[in-house]
Image (cartoon, rainbow, N blue to C red; front, top):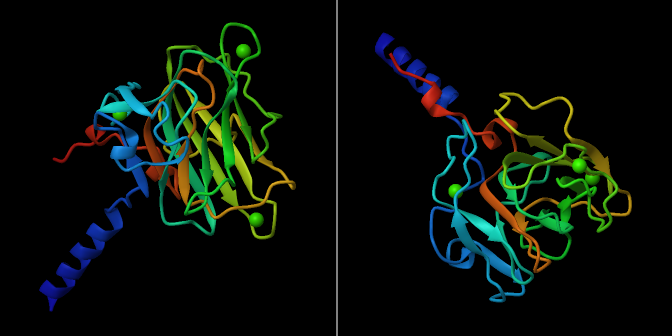
Length: 246
Ligand SMILES: [Ca+2]
Ligand SMILES: [Ca+2]
Ligand SMILES: [Ca+2]
């Protein structure tokens, strides 16, 4: 009996310490086209198809430099990766970002499963003309009304987290954006760089796909280590090398 109780406790302890996996975790550990490696084209299939470049590095990120990264450097194909649609609570999309140009447009967004043209949580790159760049965010509009004032540097890798919040009711969901230049907060920062913002002119979605977009021949945006989940902890990867087992 005691053995059985101890055994049960052991199983419970194991269960309690098991980390749930993100619904998407892609470090682009492949060469060739994204569409040959788990992503699907939903626009401009095969035209300037999205391929890879060397993986991005970010100090402390457990998947820094793992594999390659997605290269969004032209106008043409847009790709997405679907996941089981989420119908309540927050959805987080964490990714590494490195830009070499600020040609304005949105390059990452959420949609439904299957994807349609209802793009929400549009993450823009833009500039205020001072030799650096900023990130913008809209619920669904193509006009940026909320952007950072961070003077982001080109050729530098940032850790960005898009959050989509499902709120009971219609046309009232919200989005926000965290932009980090170093470190991984174990808990979500109280104040995002942008948001939360909502837009009554934009319908809500049950997020079920994450998309990468190519919109201009002059855009130069590299995205890596895409992680989608419903919790901050799963999106901001734990650095397992920081733990030791005695
Ligand atoms: Ca990578
Ligand atoms: Ca600036
Ligand atoms: Ca809603």
